[in-house]
Length: 293
Picture 1 (spheres, rainbow, N blue to C red):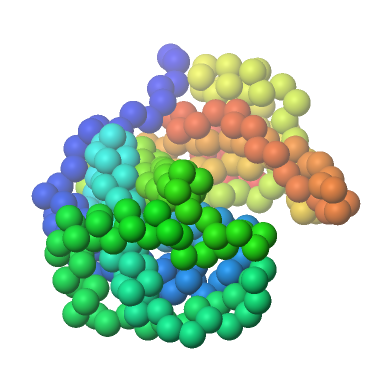
Picture 2 (tube, rainbow, N blue to C red):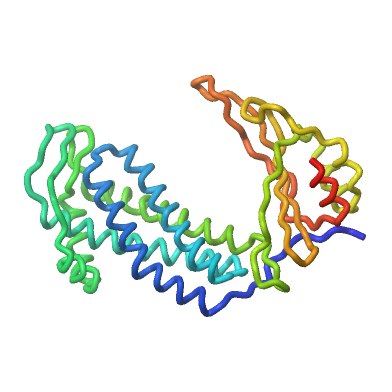
């Protein structure tokens, strides 16, 4: 018998849409507020780039843990769409808040190369901007024409500024969409109406014959795993990671990744991840063999 792989059922619940709406109305505006103040008061482009990635991650995590996980979404496409829409909503609130900061800006401290402009938002004004997309768009166009911040002593405006805004939007929406998509495709037990329990086993030796491992797993041959050795120091050497997904209804899945050790430019150990197999069904004997490890 050939082992099968987990395939999402494609189902979702009305609760997930309600939770998404609540997240969009309450949690995402708060996250957008934090993001807006960070990029306003941190005048370093490269740090702001990382903050933007963090904004997308935060948005994706909120949607993934609330709408997808609690709402039991088992449809990756719906997960992706909710994440992308949520990223757009978070970005829209960010624009309303950031434009309000521009409107209420006052003294600037610093020099021609780097500086910070003091500003605080007026909540009623933010709500007014958010409720009037046309007005908000006009402000954005005007800001794009003249710019509000500089790079290497020059004010950034026009086409280059629009390019930066587009990159910001793609990062925010793209990152926000990936996490809910990934969560929606992880194993879910339809019989128990719950997510499988995920457990990462201790690090094993690096697998140098991944094709054979997959072949044995598909043929449901557990003998290969009896010789697996747990390594002493996974932080400094290549190793493999086994993640087991179990439920109270007997069925279980396994994912395996190889972690290849390498040194970065600072001489520090880093790891490249190579996926060997993902969400393959494992028999009771394989579960028991791995449990002894």
